[in-house]
Length: 92
Image: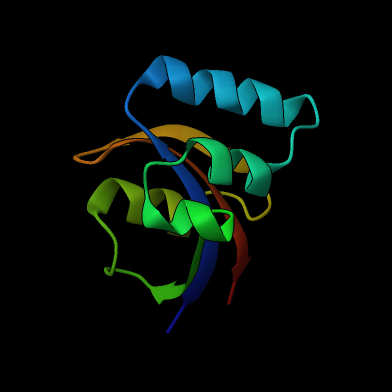
């Protein structure tokens, strides 16, 4: 069974998500930005979601985690919770 390890930042608007992605692409620290901006409790852990299997996350998030590239910040990914930036740090 394939499992992924990922971290994310959850915000309310696509604009906020794009602004954060731009900061990360310019060298901003993902974990620090997650702690400062994420509306998910995981933000306090730098956005760390741990390791999970396909089907454990909402569909849009699951698709991005299991079909996107490892080590690349993806997003905005829109779900019922808001807009996510996500990075799969490991998949095996």
